[in-house]
Amino acid sequence: MSKKRWLALALAATMGLSTLAGCSSGGNNDSDADKTNAGTDGTTQLEFWTFTEIHGTFYEEMAKKWNEANPDKQISINVNVMPYDDMHNKLQIALTAGEGTPDFVDIEQGKFANFMQGTPALMDLTEVAEPYTSEGQVVQSRLDIYSKDGALYGLPTHVGATVAFYNVELLEAAGIDYTTIVTWDDFKEAGIKYHEATGKYLGTADTSALWTENLLLAELGGEYTDADDVVTVNSPEMVEAMNLLKDLYDNNVIGTVPGGNPDKEEAYGAFNNGDFACAIMPMWQMSRYTSYMPDLAGKIAIAPAPVMEESAAEKSVGGGGTGTSVVAGKDNSELAAEFIAYAKLSEEGAAEIWNMLGFDPCVTTIWDDESITKDPDNQFVKYFVTNPFDVLMSIQDGIVGLDSHASSSYPSINNMFTTVTLNDIFENGVDVQTALDQAQADLKNELGQ
Image (cartoon, rainbow, N blue to C red; front, side):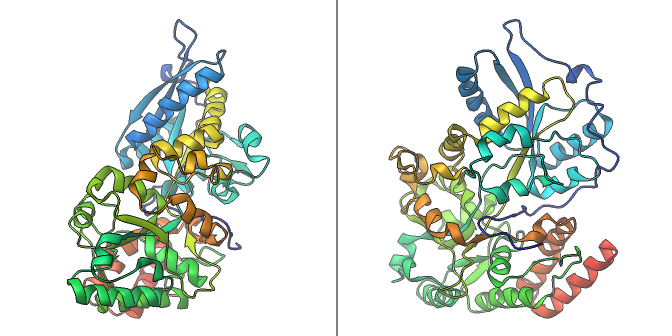
């Protein structure tokens, strides 16, 4: 596969499920739970499964907007929030059985490929998405993540561009101007100075996620697998990326963070305590700051992530995401598909994805709509020192993706790194080349390659 410019095909760091071989798109109308559920007022109730409560709140709000615009197609949403693994496991079982399925469902990117095996039991959304995608206003590479053989089976939630979140107050107290950090060499120089001044770390050495490794691989032109889906985790690019991070670690620029990466409850406490002055994360990390680190409001600046060279074309990589899908063959499938296309791909939906969730939306027509992006009442605009969309616009042509994130091998790769390899390198003192060679051998054995 060729590298897709513009936006990432980033898959979140999760462990894969067994495949859905044998599923078909039919056979989903057999149980009482799958029959039309219409109220006496003509409102149709749609069953929605998700692993994130705020997503349910978003769809309930979008249902109100839908009902205002579609008086002849009134809906209500029955939100069912489940733990992450439980929901994906339950969905797999229900699809395999052909009964007890929801009308529409959130599927996390790291799990999505598992639901594409054989003939997907999910509805082809290409036709309902077309009115929103025909003018190119939706980032195509984010649609590609949820596509198979030219058919679209899920709708994206955000871009997830990887950026740097700097604590300006901490850095200024140490005599560091974050705007001078452009390259990884700059980051190292600033981190050494910061540690000497404070005894604390500039950034994090993550052991439970691959956010920074994804960024470095994208910047270096590497992949986790080759074009034949064979693992290549000890490639020259991966060795260079991990040696760069290990050098930062050895020089006290980055340190291991509680919870293993910035998107953990334990890590939120460490950032609140000032133990780290920078997090390199996808832009959706904004919502973690507003929700879990309110005392840092007015102190955090969003900036482009460090690059290998100032002239580098690659400036970011997409990270994480959720595709929303419709179960095929149900009485309300068409209505559910029309609704989620409106909720996810319309300008109204994109605005709410930003306003409610703090995500960088995939509908690019709102990126330069200052009534949305610079609304002084928006919680994210108020919280951060810099405007998130100014940063997004400055890197938009340099956000790339890793094709190997769509690989069937990636869940195993992610699990190996986040449970063994990263800990060996950062915690156990194992040489980078040795650790990567071991991961390569173990993965090839596990995957039968």
